[in-house]
Length: 516
RNA sequence: GGCCCGUUCGUCUAGCGGUCUAGGACGCCACCCUUUCACGGUGGAAACACGGGUUCGAGUCCCGUACGGGUCACCA
Image (cartoon, rainbow, N blue to C red; front, side):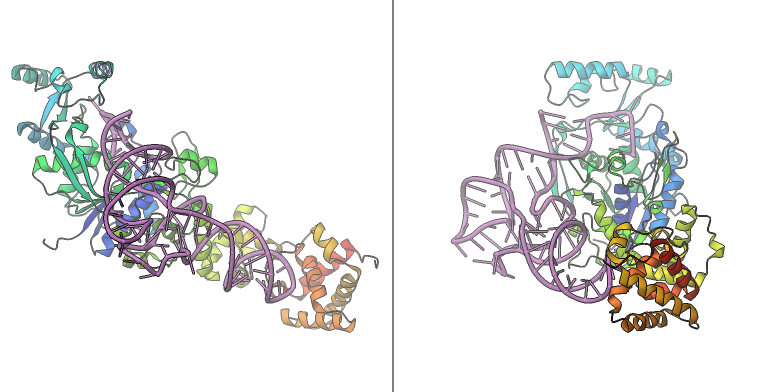
């Protein structure tokens, strides 16, 4: 075997948002290409004009870019084997279909929809196990195999609509080796005479796919398992053309988390998680929130998807794209479908979130702030302080944009206090010490967090109380709640003035409970 | 229904005939750490669908059954 360059393609049809399963297919293609120092190609399969959706193609590029899956060749960046949009290659498909007719491997068919339906009914009535347009039934239909050559010619010349169908042999064993499933064998009798060229002159997927993969020198076809049943058709076409078929790898499906069946947009909506990488608005104006907008980091999505149906040779879980490229191989892809696990996706997000620096998190923090509509302006916030806060919060949240919500108390003094916590922590002793502490603190000079803690400790110790008894009460007074980051850090960031102010408010509001 | 593909903890999975009293991760539970909540640490419950073979020996190979999935368009 010659050392030919590995070339793989991701070939979506621009009919809407890019399904998460499609994203994984793109990822595996990308990883495989890069692993073998080959090319990752995007080809747009838009041969169905009825399903054209404006914006869908651009969406695909944006989504892949966000994830870091940069194509080497695509309709957008071009390449040596363009055009990469099938609608722009329309004219070239016909000659290949005609060639098949000339060589006796395809034929013209003039059957109307009604006639096709009638045939199907006839076969069903005759209890046919496989009611289809095939080696048997085609002989009783209107096509160039049954009609006299003059009539065929006349019909075509008169402009009568027709399709070109593939002439699948009756007896033949078709086999191919799939990288994931091993040898797959199908008998040609189970196949039907697929339409190759539609009456509108556009090729069907089957024809366009084979012609383009060949012309674009695709070496490996990595696609979803839903294509497995049509793979024999494709293998047969390669044989008809006398072309070397690419190698195949049919990926297991991504299944719904509950119940049975493959993951669909409907199910994802129902269960409350995104199905698209980026937010997508369909033509009716329905908005589907994307993973990005939901707060996911691209690294997390990549890592999560990579492990959904593939496993490294060791037990590592966290991989950068670069590490995935190093480690990836088709042989380690699982055979069976994988249930989608949104909880695990969130866990990955947390992992990557923690790896970010405070600065990197800043934009997310501000984004959360703006969305919260609090009236607090981003411009009014001390950046240095905000960075510290991001650093402090990142281990306690799942999504970067949650930082604001969790850290709001830094900017908005508590107006009320968690009742349960008050009952438990705000006792006579603690309140009295805090009152004392507030007064001393006000009188003291400049204090940082550590100094404030020390002062509190002294105050408490003077009354024979351990600091651990009053810290919770202090937290309550300062933040209004019992959950949050290190209290000394909070005191430090807030500063003396604010701490005193909040303490006074808490004491005024909660009072000093009577000794019980 | 025909054809094709699949089946290890709840979930993602490791396992490529003996090292499996089946390993890791998410989730769950307990404990520890701790001024709180998290994080982290330690530990725990939790799986080879079933039945036949092959073999000295089967989660691992073969067959069958059951169950699940995919696909059967002039859609991709």
